[in-house]
Length: 368
Image (cartoon, rainbow, N blue to C red):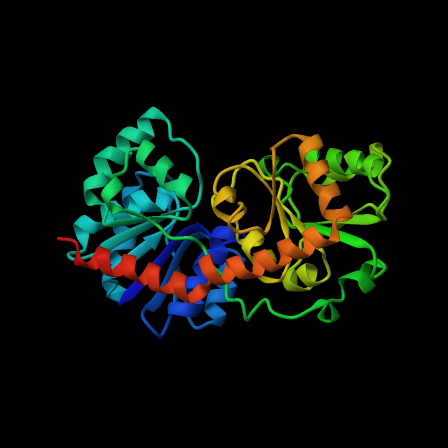
C-alpha cells in the first residue's frame, strides 16, 4: 500500500513526531511511505534521511483548488493508494483531490480537541460523505470530531504510542545533571513544552514559586523548549526571585531521552492536549507524571494507570500541591514510576499502535 503522509508544516512538534514514528515503523513492512508538505522544517530532513520521497505542495487555504490539482497530480505520479493527513487545510485538499484520482482513499488524524466554528462545521458535514476513515488519538477527541460534524461510524480511537526499547535505560546514561551542575540527590522535574500561550508556563512558574514556600525538599524545574513566550517566562521567574537552583531554562533540545533520564518527574501544564507524546515518552523512560486534567490527559493519567497525578489547569495551588506530594513521598513516587512503565506496555506500546493504524488504512481501502 502506497501511503502519502500530508502535513502543512513539517516542523518539530507532536504531530510531526506522529508522522515520523508511523513512517519509521510501517515503511517497507506494510506500506511504502511518501511525504508532502507546505512549509519545510526538521521533519523533511528526518524523512529524507530515511529515504522517503518528499515534495512540496503549496496549500494557502482550505479550499485551494490549485493545491487540489497539484496534490492529485502528485498522487497519480507516485501511484498513491491512500493519503493520511492531520490538519483541516490539507484534509480538505485531500478530500477534494479524490474526485481527480479514482480509488484514492483519505484517512485523517485529529490531534486537537477544539470546537470548530459554525461555517467549518457546515463544511465538515458537506465533505463528510467523501471521508473514508478518521483517527482520534483520545476519547475526548472522538467526541469533538462528532460535535464538529463528522460521522461517528468512521471514527476510531487509536492512542499514540512509543517503543519501550527506545526509552529504556537508567540515569547513568544522562549527562543532564553534570551539564547543569545539579547534584545527583536533588529532585529534578522536567517540562519540555514549547513556550506558547496554551502551554501554561506562566502559572507553572507561579506554582514553582509557591512550592518553595511549602516544601523543604531541594528541587530544580528544568524547562526545555523555545517559542515566543520564552523571554517573558524568564522575566517572570526573575521577578519572582526564583534562582537557577530552582528553575533552569535550557532552550530547545534534540536529546530528549537524555533529559528524561536525568529527571525524576515529568510535568505537563498545557491547556490543550489530545494525547501528548512527551507524556508517554517520559513514562516509557520511567518517569511519573503530573498533568493537567485537560483533553486526553485523563486517558493516560488515571487511577487504573497509577502513573501520576492530575492537576487543575491554571491553578498554582493544585499544581504545587501535586509537586509537593511527589517530592515528599518517595514510596508514592516509586509506585507511580512502576505504574508508568506498566501502562506503556498495556496501552501505549508501538506494535499495538501500528496494528490498529494499519487496520484503519485497510478499512479505508475497503470502503465502497
